[in-house]
Image (cartoon, rainbow, N blue to C red; front, side, top):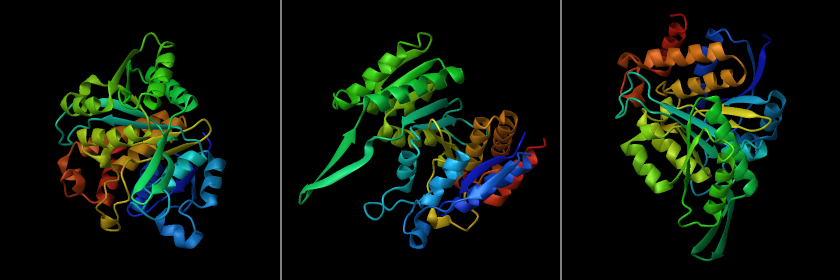
Length: 335
């Protein structure tokens, strides 16, 4: 198979460390990749005047696939989120976050295996806010039939492709009757076209309760942008934290793979970051590219390494450094 040309966005904070680890693992797995490195994030604003320079989008449009490290977004001030801007600019409408228990990782549940499908382009993340009068801010939530139908179709198709037999639409339509109501109307229409898939609806707060009480009842959670952002982090906590959960942002034309976690500037450069989430995101990327065997080998290697507490990095309560985890995964590829 010919070489894959892929955009690599190292990102901020621990980003260069964990994406570097992933690139080492991909090379060790024998996948021929030609990286096009593109700088983005808070650390390049002074250099380019933007956290998402035009050359980043140009590179992804050329390669169609990217592996991305975390990008920092200031809280309550500063520039707009480059993550949200990237999704909108490339119409990466579907966030896919598989959440699965790994052997050896200390967690309260041993058999979690679900995926969150999150609408990625609208909702509260539309970013439409304004000051009404001093002391009063209005933020608009945008829900459209087009986006709600598209993400619902994606979710049901994903369920079929991955052998899942149940889809749960998460909402707050008891309060936001028009916006979340429209989302549910669209999900119901799509569900009727999949009679072999069980379909249910659950209010978001009840979903949170069931997730921490009996997450095994869920297979695929379909939800709007904000709910998906919040509950995906909750689900990560069920299986060991953000350091072991991969993710992808997918559109019709482009795909960007990234871990769920942030840039963790407090530990940047110290060799303490857990590279597993980005390595697993890279494995998802390989499957997207048709490299099923290599992707499966990497996933198996990560599971094998994390089964041994001696290989756990600090976020899992262990002693291993970023490089030690990476080296162990590479060694496990040949076992």
